[in-house]
Image (cartoon, rainbow, N blue to C red):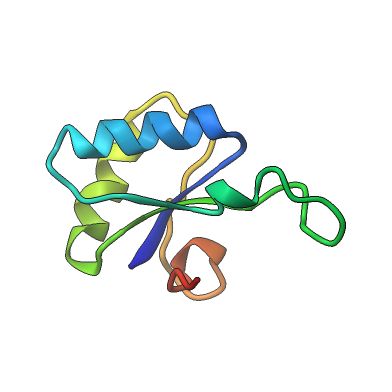
Length: 87
């Protein structure tokens, strides 16, 4: 799975998820269960909208068209959105 969008909040994550599911793209939100955590967890960058590898290009192109605040536009080297989703 690859990260196609890093959401600032849960609402943004679910907006992206539901938009992609409307295209029959399987989607998983990583970090959703960590929102209630405290202590050493980072405040931002916890929510990652991920899709299976074959859908990355289609999902990224579609998310660019949506009025969301940020996305993983360039999947080049050094882009945190290009990292494989783990855990």
